[in-house]
Every structure is written in structure tokens, then in C-alpha cells.
Image (cartoon, rainbow, N blue to C red; front, side):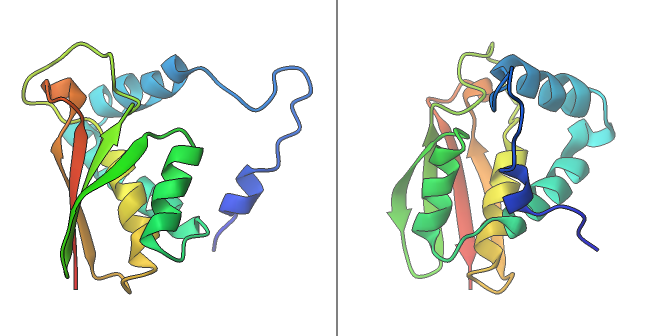
Length: 149
């Protein structure tokens, strides 16, 4: 049973503080609360949460997903390569941009899972999203390989 929908999340009635929260709060929830506070760096949780968020989004095409990703200020996606069963996407201006580099750490699994959940509606669930680069790892941008059949 779904208690909330993505459309419900748009119903904001905060007259004084408005519809924005600081990025440092989001980063704290993700990286201190989940990444550091949960087993396996929160990976099982972020994958489950991200997929559910993605599935609830009004997505009908890959372009819809990429546009919504930017509209929600998750990052600016750019398709680097597209074949019959794979898409490579770079994310510029990702939420992790500017954090201290920590080689060997990739922290944008939630964002990849959101893409996976959203795109699973297009590809009937036969999709996999894997983060292969991350700003936190010292890479120039975050990047995902999306495979589908």
C-alpha cells in the first residue's frame, strides 16, 4: 500500500520557510545518517528507497527522467553514449560536488537507484543502473552505466 505519491510531495504549504531545504541537510541525511550510520554504507536502504522514489515519478521516456533529474536539482545529466541496450550518463553538478575526495568511495547510489526505478517503468523492470564514477572518488563527474533489455 502506497501512503504517498510523488504528486503528494509537490503539495507544499510552508508559508515562512518555503519549498527549499539546504543541501547540507540532504548531504547530512545521506552521508552521515545513511552512508555512515547503516550497515554496508546504507546501500540496501538507498537502493530500495531510490527505486521506490523513481517508480513514483511521472516518467514515460528517458528524456523525461533526465529532465526531472535536473528539475529536482539532483544534477545535470548528459548522455555520453547510447546503444541498443546501454546508456552511459554523466551527472554534472551532482549533490556530492565539492565534498572532500575519498578514494574508493562512491556515494551516489541513491541517485542511480532513482534513475533505475524511473526507467524500470519504460523497460518493464529489466534494467540495471551502476555507478562507475563519483566526484567523491576523485572523478571529474558522477557517471552511471544503464543496461536494459
